[in-house]
Image 1 (cartoon, rainbow, N blue to C red):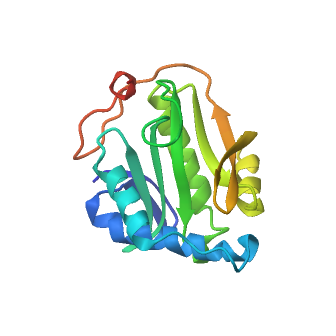
Image 2: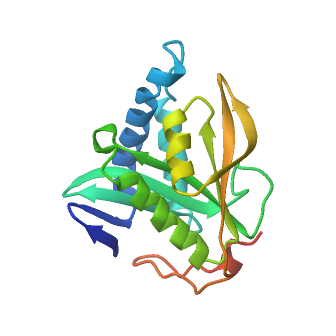
Length: 196
């Protein structure tokens, strides 16, 4: 697979099925760390549910998934798809939805999350999306602050996912439709492919 960008000891690349278990482990590690702000009564999602969600993302030819690696270790991941593909809300041909970033807590404050989000923003803009959206738990002050520092804005309270309410964050892109993006080992993806 093609490397997307490199700097220092972390490389970003397109993800594939072989990355599934590492992405699921990252997601669960991040969810376990949420106990600090969510409270001891909250428990992370089930392993089987996380595996199914990420497996579907990796198999969907219209969803782009990237991983950040440090040597052979996956330290972060992010996914981009058309909003409304699944349970994100009404379908919109010009809105991309991000899942993540998820970053190994040992790699927080190392720029991994920033690089993942910036790469996903560039991918979204290049695919011609006018904006990107994602949801963050309201209690996740660290995650909300991170997005705000990157220029994302909170739009409103999103759906409630027991026991946590979610906030919708968005980022608008200026320019318009860009060229199709080619991924090694995958077909070309263009904006018209992502329309309903």
